[in-house]
Amino acid sequence: MDGRPSWDTPLQFVLACVSYAVGLGNVWRFPYLCQMHGGGGFIIPYLIMLVLEGVPLFYMELAVGQKMRLGSIGAWSAISPYLGGVGVASVVTSLYLCLYYNVIIAWAFWYLFHSFQATLPWAECPGNENLTGVLQECEASSPTQYFWYRETLNITSSIEEGGGWHRGQALCLLLAWAVVYLCIIKGVASTGKVVYFTATFPYLVLIIYLIRGVTLHGALNGLKYMFTPKMEQLANPMAWINAATQIFYSLGLGFGSLIAFSSYNEPHNNFEQQAIVVSIINSGTSIFASIVTFSIYGFKATFSYESCLERMRTLLLNTFDLVEDSINKENINHWMTELNRTDPGRFSSLSTQLQSCNLEAELDTAVEGTGLAFIVYSEAIKNMPISQLWSVLYFSMLLMLGVGSMLGNVTAITTPLRDFKFLSRRLSSEALNGLVCLLCLLLSLGFTTRSGSYWFAIFNDYACTFSLLFIVLIEIIGVCYIYGLTRFEQDIEDMIGHRPHWYWKVVWAVLGPLIIVGLFLFYVSSYIMGGTPTYQAWDKDLGKAIAKTYPVYAQAFIVLLLLSSMSCVPLVAFLSYLVMK
Image 1 (cartoon, rainbow, N blue to C red):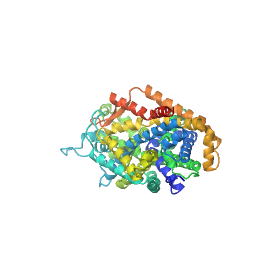
Image 2: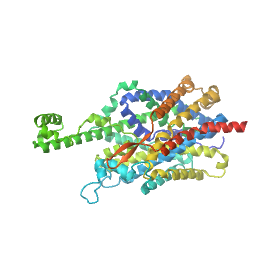
Image 3: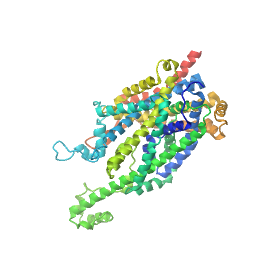
């Protein structure tokens, strides 16, 4: 043996992979894509892409890590000196992810701490200075949006307005990094213990939420919406592209985390079975989380729809002096038509106050990312009985999902660094992990400024997208056509006792590269054809987010993010050529 640390049991490794792969994307991005592409109509291409893309590439990365017993930089350098840049690119990409991903954990801490109040602070608007009403910004939007944009972010009106630091968010970010450091302080020795909790606690909360969710008024409307497939979406190329992308990112391919985790396996660990098991658990969790989300989403949509009907009913009763019981939710549309016919003058005077109440429109409103996690869920939670309890459970779950993924993200950085002898000899595991966490903390403090959420959006949209596709494409080419597929088969046989099935080889050599090239070309064309990139800026007067164009320096920064990690591959290859020449 080479003295390398190992997982105590294969179960620890599986739980670490589950904790890393099952993250916030399963809870908020997958339900959003289901909603956007017609519920069950999206699950079909998603499962097909799992088989064609997700599991085989997951298998390949685990095999590389276990065979080379090195982090991403060392593993790809061992395959070919010219491929060392693939590992460097993975580390850079993981660094970018760490910088902004832990900010989400800070936000979850912020909401968790504010959940311990007699009345949830996002349940009602605060009063104005004269106490004669509520704040105009809150009245123009909603209590949940006001708490998110003003109390949580204290956001500026554009990315060009710097603003000051949000002290509360900075302290929450410090706490988030302290938690991550304590979880990885001794490397796999401590991570292996933590994953027993981070991998299982979210499932406990999801089960509790499922039981609560399906009993909520209107939950059936959400579940019916999810499981009524719009089969025309199967002919929509975007549904297939989004399915492939979701599989790609939810499994964490290309970051180097899987290679780092599997490098701590025993040489003859059966990673083939583990790759299949973890992939199925990850995708099953996405579908399970969507059932929970759509039950709660159905409750929220039904509550909003019925509240709209009640407002219109009250308006009609007060305007036309009708008997209290004459109008109800079932006959309100009939009464509106009748009143418009019999008293058109008075009815037209209500034109500015009348709203169109439509349950389907409420369900069709797609919300992605932080909007789903911190606004839509908060909106639903505040209307539940014992809302504080459900708030604590939900944001605790977000914390565990975030921390579990962060363990893999940080390990993808620390493992390759620890493989360098000059670092491992001079710094203990605790010191090296601490320095990485401290550096990430300092670099990510910019996200806690008043304009920080706009920069968060840039990192979230652009820091990893192109680079991961490029990294995994080079990984497949490196394994199949530089290292050699036959040689790779022999390595797998040496580790697990048999050669990989022909299906794995077909995907690695042919289907995988074709799918990734297709995705890569799609993203390049979308970026070029999409025109000047825009972002959602909060307008406090209108009480909603509006689209604005990124300033020139922000566009330049986006290009820098896109190229910085990918450029590591040719740069390191060129340097290796000069050294070996």
